[in-house]
Each structure stands twice: as C-alpha cells, then as structure tokens.
Image 1 (cartoon, protein in one colour):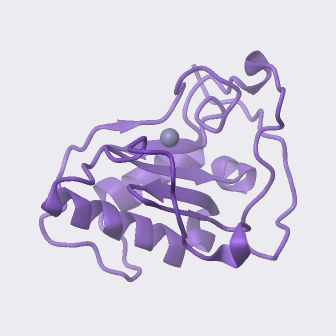
Image 2: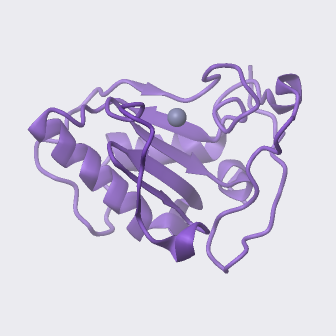
Amino acid sequence: MAWRDVCVRGRPAGGRVRQDDVPRGSRARDHDAGGPSPGIERFIREVVVGTPALAPFKPRGFPAGLRVQTYPGRGHADVHFEGRAADVFLSFTDSKQRECGNWLFDWCVANCRAYKIQGVIFGDRQWFSEMAGGRILPRRDGQAHYDHVHIELNGDGAARR
Ligand SMILES: [Zn+2]
C-alpha cells in the first residue's frame, strides 16, 4: 500500500526541524499511513545503505544489509505508523556495532536539516531538535534502545516538502 500523508503538521518551535508529535489520545487508525514515507525511504537509501557525502564520515566497515524496520511499528498512533520513523538494528553492547550506531546518531544530529530529522535515540543517548535547546540528553528507559537506532522525521521531511 502506498504511503498517504496522515501527519499532523506542527511548527518548528525554535527554527530547527521538530514539529508536533502525534497528539496524545489520538486514535491509531487516524495515523495509519499505509507504508513508509518517501522521506524515510530516501534517508535509508542514502544514509543507512549508501554513503552520505556530509560529515561526520561513515565508518569503514559499516555493515551492509542491516535490518531496518519502518512501518507499521506496533500499530500505535506514533511516528512509525505514520511512516516517518526507522529503527536501524545495531547493538549498543557490541563495541563495533556501537561505533556504527553512535556514528548514525551523531550524523543525524549534525545533519538534521538535510532530511528534517526531528529525533534520534540510541543506547543511553537521545536528541530531539526542540528539546533542551537541541542538546543531547541521557535516555533513561532501560535498554529499550540498546538493539536499534530510532530515527524520526518531521511531517515535512516524511513528505519531502
Ligand atoms: Zn523506532
């Protein structure tokens, strides 16, 4: 099924890229995009599979053929169901994979405007464009993000506007 744009457009609060999240209390079916968005597919193709030209430069030995999950996630009213998030499976507890996951995290923060990336989580770090002035913060949800890097785009990034 082709992606359809169900994202609620917010407004970048501080001039960066974050828009509103899925409003609390939303019904899941109102956020069912039917598939991954063009923006998240391009991000995966160009950054996860390909080698982006922008620094920080991709580490040698970044694994090919990584498992990536986008849509539908858990089928909840969230950014995965809207087709604008990707989970890239790299282990935070394996030193080589952690290096690759940390690179992906840092790349997303440094180049958030290029793909309108509004948030990224890996291991014990999280970053959201409009949270804490765009500073990287500790993530305290146990080991929920120890086996994947979570990346989410804002609605415009998903739609490639
Ligand atoms: Zn995720």
